[in-house]
Amino acid sequence: MKTNLFSYLTYKVNINRLDELTNWPPVSWLKKFFIQRMIDWQFPEHIFLETTSACNLQCKLCPRTSGETLVGHMDLELFKKIVAEAKTYGPRTFCLHLFGEPLLAPKFIEEIFYIKQANPKNIIVLTTNGTLLDDKIGRAMIEAPIDKIAISFMAATKEKYADITGTDLLERVEENVKKLIALKKESGKNKPKIILRMILEDYNRDEAEIFQNKWQNYPVIVEVRPAHNYGGNVPYGTKRDEKKKRWPCYHFWLSPAVHWNGDFSICCNDYARIAVLGNTQEKTINELWNAPILKVWRQAQLKDNFHCPSICENCNVWTMYHDIWFDWQKK
Picture (tube, rainbow, N blue to C red):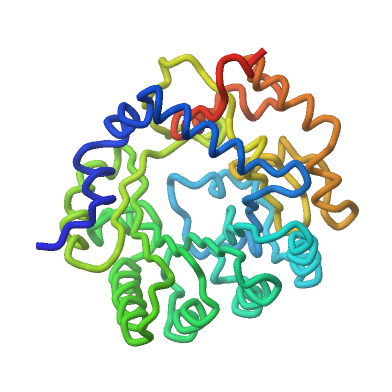
C-alpha cells in the first residue's frame, strides 16, 4: 500500500507533533533565519491575485456566504500590470485564488501562461473546488505549467458534501481529479504537484479518515488541515495552540493579496477589506508594500499589539504558522 509521507505526518501524527520537532531550538533558529531571508522590501515574495471572486458553491465554511464579498473578475490589463511589475524584482510566487473559484476567471488559461512567459521561474499555486477541472484546463495546467494545485474537498461522502457545499458534485470532482492524474502521467511531467485537501471542522471531522483512505493509493498529497476563523469573523476555526503566547503574523512581511478590483490588502483572509492599503490601479505594488501605515502595522505586530488593523484582533490564523521572529527583534 502506497503512503505519502507528508500525508501520513500531517494526518496520522498531527501538525502539533510536527511543531514539536520544528520548535527544537537549533531547527527553530535556522527556520527563522531562512524565512527572514525571503523577505523582500521592494515587492512581496508571495502574492495572492484574485482573478475572480465568483464561485459556483456555497460552502458553510466560507465567508462568501456572509454576503460581504463583492463579485467580479480582475481586468486582464491590471493582471498583466502586476505581473510585469513583479518581473523587475525577479521570480515570485503567484497564488491565483482568494475568495472565488479561479477556474471561473474568463481569461484563466491566458493568465497562467502570461505568468510563466514573464518569468519561467515564477511559481503558480492554485486552490480550486475542482468542479470545473476539465481536460482543456487540465492540459493547460500541465503545459504552462502550474506548479501546485490544491483541490478542496469539504467532505468524503456525497451526503455530507451536498450538505456543506449545497451541490451534489462530489463524484464529478473525484473524476476530474483522476483525469488530471492520468493527464499528468501521460505527459511524463512532474508538475503540477497535486494536493487533495480537506479543511477540518466539527461537522466533517468524522470523514477525515474516509478521505485519507480513499486517496492514499494515488500519486497525490492528501492533506487534512484545520480550519481558521477568517479574522474572527466566521463561527468556525481551529482552537489549536490558542493558549500559546501570540506571535506576529507572517502576512505583513511575505504574503499580501490583491482583490479582483485592484484593492491591495495585507491579508489573504480579508474578505471584508478591512486591511486595504490602496488600489493597484492607482499605485504600484512597490508603493503599497512600503506604505507608511504598513510600517506602523508591522511594528505593532512586533510589539504584541494585535489590534491594528482590526481584522487581526480576534484572528487565529497565526496559530497555523510558525513564529518567524527572534525574541530580541520583538521590541
